[in-house]
Length: 123
Image (cartoon, rainbow, N blue to C red; front, side, top):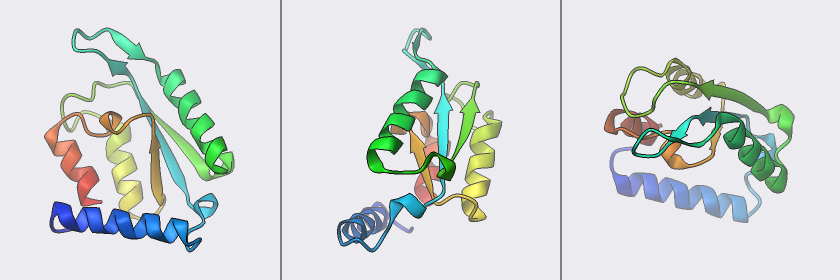
């Protein structure tokens, strides 16, 4: 991806493929990335188990088999880059083709800082 428009165009094309039945999401390999959610005063808003339960419910609703989902739990804060070992491993696994897609509670779980947001966008 070279620009935000390239990302947008790729997402539009993917969704059109889904609508046309060209992509079967039940065949994709997902990584469910769950981490602690905190408010600005560092109070926990949503637990890792809550994240996993909500994502599992969404996967069930979409018809994604649980066997196609590997869970990755992160205990570290998401506010600083390069301190989350599970996030780093997930990025490498996606780059090497181990996973096709990420399932997460909210996009903020993936990119709470500029460096990690760039890594996700680059994928």
